[in-house]
Structure formats: C-alpha cells, structure tokens
Image 1 (cartoon, rainbow, N blue to C red):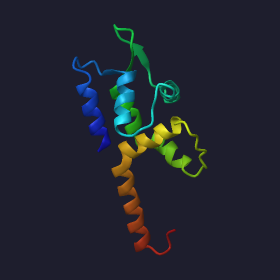
Image 2: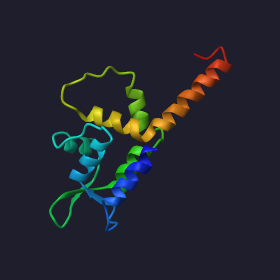
Image 3: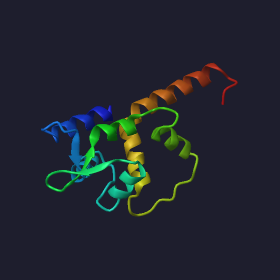
Image 4: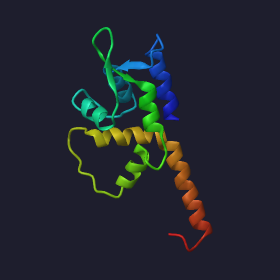
Length: 134
C-alpha cells in the first residue's frame, strides 16, 4: 500500500530518526508518486490540513511525517478521507495549475487505493446479491 512506500521513503530521508523531513523532501517524494505538489501550493495545502511545521538547525521548514501519514491514513467518519468521499458529489473546477484538491486526490489514490477498491468490490457484490439495493 502507498502508506508503506511513503513511510519507507520518509524513514530513509530521516537517518537521525527525528520523524521530521524538510518541506523540499516532502515535495520531491510526493512528486515521485505523480502527486502535483510544488513550492507554489505546498504551504496552502499544509495549512489547510493543519500540518504543524517547525524549523531545523539549518533553518529549513520541517514536517512530522508520522503525523502527516496518520492524518491522511485515518479512515474514521470525521477523517480527511470521509470528507473527501463526501466531496465527490460536488463538481470540481479544474485549473491549469495544480491546487490543493489535486494533491488531495493524489494522496487518496496513493494511500487508499486498495481500501477503496475493496469497498467498491464489496458494494458491488452485495448489490448483486440483493436486488433491492441501488
């Protein structure tokens, strides 16, 4: 699953095991997974999702990657994923420049692909078994 790939990469980028990566490392890692994040939209994205930032000894902005992964991996009723799924019903406006919705969509695809596929398959199976559904 995408969570484990990201966790492994973030751990490799953190040889001192501080649980922190730089904002630049986060951008580069997410770009490797075709998630359209850039220096132009990362601050807005991190602020929207209440990601706490700090500065390291080199005065670089850092992110706690465990908190980041936990936030986006949460599947509770009040989670980012639950809100994103409910937002699927709303029309999206596409812009030429990537925005926070594009980043969110990429993270959902990466972190929840298997979960959403299994959920969809379960719903399809149940609806085939019960003609009164859907």
